[in-house]
Image 1: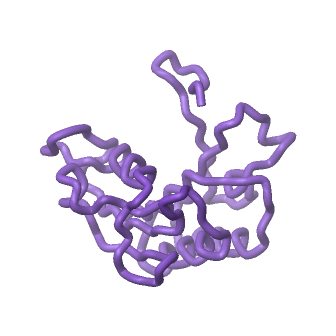
Image 2: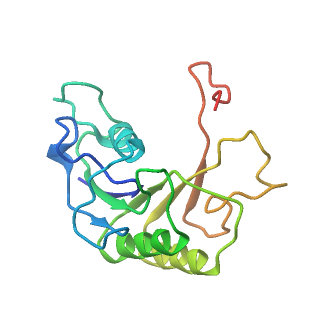
Length: 167
């Protein structure tokens, strides 16, 4: 299984759908190796990516991945740019071939650009959310989705009719 860094609010690694694909991770808020999710978003994302086929609930896109939760978002849904940068660098240094980055804002950060370039040099795909506000990213950039680095793949949500999702 390919190692995927989920840079988010952590993962509930005890969840029966995810426990078998848990590959260890890091909590950048508390600087501990315990990235347990206290928000729910990271667990939801991890389930979409890699919930096991033999699970009790949902099935993810890829059943045999190694999920590496990199927690920088707290229970309140907020995190610091510095912790996000540390998470990207940790993923690159610890063998994540893909990172999922479902967060963003309108502020450019040279440190984040440098971190994404480091992940590119390590051969890691950086998947980033386009944003949830129906804006045109060419007119109003959303970061990290709009960093111009070859490994950045920006994605948007769609509904079951392949239209923009309501959110």
